[in-house]
Length: 452
Image (tube, rainbow, N blue to C red; front, side, top):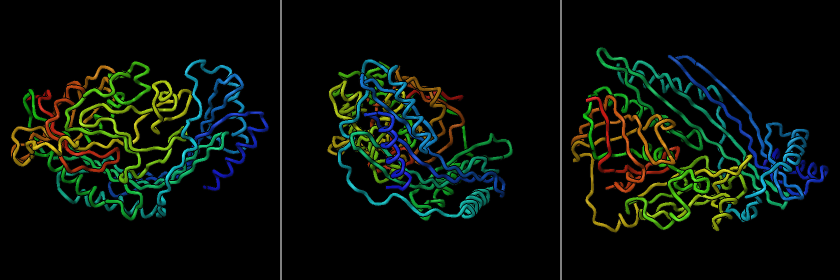
């Protein structure tokens, strides 16, 4: 266990005893991060931060709970937080009162160390400067890399409660982001970007990030307007994951109980997608370099099937929602003034039904008049999760037998449940991204609004 965490645990127990607090829990984290940015061959920004924060819950003898958060994790800060939470507990909710997760003391399988050695700041700066230079030299049309960043982060998470639960883990990862702009006579500026992440800086695919950014940028130089209409649309792994995330309230038990979801408690067991699709929440997938083995309540994280062969199979739960819906916590809780539920790491794949079926294989090398969506934009404004509708600008191409022409400007619109049922092909090969795992997904009859 981290020395700082050991000290905090000891002080928490001593302070709670001193204050006469019998029941409490604490979730927190310590983050050490260094990041750099460059601009036109020079260092633009170097930042370093060392942050810590805890959320404290205290129950009084009336069984109501108070919550407080603080970034002051020394003995004085801890005492103030416990005292404040205790005082707040007398004004806590009288119904659906949270309690310790029944799985907070369940065993968690050991895993290999998730940390890697740090590299000097000079190495980060040099690597990013070289990446910018290589991008600028890859094609005369690329005039700049206005958005970029290279960072390394080390963090420790912990959870403890007065019943003896104690969890702690440390992780680290490095990431790089590159985003270009072009300047070509008589053409609109075009842009593209790529992102890579790795647990160890030595294994960070900087070259792959450069190549993907350059290839995408150059491919957008040949652009044209498209006519509005219904199209066969292919979502890139990143685009499909962003759409699933935007409508994650479909699987969120708290959203369902709050009536802010298209799903209801009775939706389990019903088909909500084409039988070709499987979707899971898979926090411990090997590709998730920032994976945690436990959530904010201390519940072990796990793989939770959400859609199996097109059928809604499970919801994501905290201990509170699990109790209300007679289910088990799934390791997706965050504690605060209210216990919230959120997805961890989506895993989209072909279903067993798709693999067993002799379906027609679709291929961008032979398909005609297909829209390939690479990146969805304005998700914060163009998605109505409780209604199921979306209207989103996108970056992508119109593809005819392998030939790609960038779409100058267009939006894709529809209803998420109709989209899920209109899936006609899920490719077998998946891509691991920073937000999840997914293949290319083909959807028939989506509305595209262009300027042509």
